[in-house]
Structures are given as C-alpha cells and as structure tokens.
Amino acid sequence: MLLCTDLDAASAALAAGTLGCPSCQAGRLRRHGCGREREIRVPGGERETVRPPRGLCRSCGAAHQLVPAWAVPRRKDGAGVIARAAVASVLRGAGSRRPGRELGVPAGTVRGWLRRLRIRAGDMRQDASAAPEIITAGRDAPCLGPCGSALGDALAAVIACARAAITWHGCAEADMDALPGRSGISAALAPAPGS
Image (cartoon, rainbow, N blue to C red):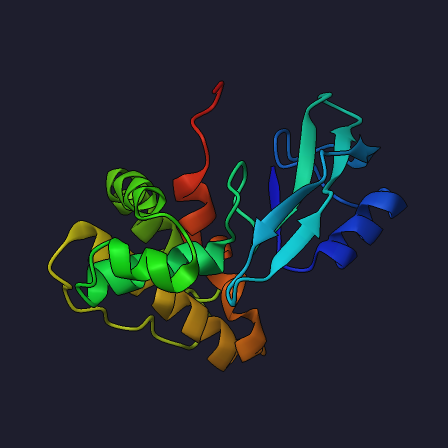
C-alpha cells in the first residue's frame, strides 16, 4: 500500500512507469489493474468513491495499491473523520458517544478506533515526528508538551505535522483531511500484515 497525497500525480507516475517500488527500492511499478471500488465517509458526512490503482514491481514482483492519504485501508471512514473523533475524545475529553453522534458514526466504532490508536500510539507519534513536514532544513520541530496520555501525545504530534505542512510546505487548509492520514493515523489503523 502506498499512501498518496496527490493520487492523480501518483497514478500518472505509475502509468509512465516512473513510480519506484517501496519494497525493493530498486524496481519500478507498472500498472496492474485496480482495487475494489468502495465508498469512504469524509468530514461533513459526505461520501467519496475510491477505486485505487494497483502497481506491480518489475524487479521483485510485489504488488502495491495506491491509496489516497485521506483514506484508511480497510476502513469505511476517512482519516479526517477518525482524527476528528480521536481529538474530540482524547484531547477534549468528549468520550466516544458525542464525537460519534456529531460525525454520524456509532459510538462502538469510535471506541474501536481509539482502542487501536492507543495500542499503536508510540508508532504513530514516531511516524509523525519523523515526517518530512517536521524535519525541514533550517527549521526546528515544534516543541510538544505532554498531553496526559500516550495517545494524546501522538495526536498532538500528528496535528503539529499537519500544521507544519500547511505553514512550511505550501499545503492548503483543505488538505487538512489528508494530512493526518499521511502523518501516521492511516498506518496506525491499518490491519496487521496477513489479516
């Protein structure tokens, strides 16, 4: 799986045969069909339809699906929806019912996201802290104070990474729904390998 901030540009690189393989780092991917079409809930209650293109490495034979950064693999809800629920619950103390009701998601689903994010909080914070948006030549990474929990600290790092992308790298506020996915939430919620 390749999380792509700009799926159109990544698809064009795949079609041109210039997209590198993340598995072997040496080969190039060639177009290899598409994944299953699915609908994903995005903030505001809207639904986006996605049919991610697939690529196959010419060198190692690994298959990769190009997924937009705002989508979370095997989840019906986008990274922006999940990030909003997690921030409301963890950083604002809203529990799981109220964020679920506000986002049109069952409270049990929000609890499941939070459980998974708590388990992977350390990895998520590390991913966000090591993101290119934070590690920028000549700029200091934002100093993050403790938030009272490992998940709170991880979410603060994801938010700082998204803000850095907007401030220093020309991303727009409209990209805010894709940035949490690219900064660690999608990887933290991704299913375990082989599941």
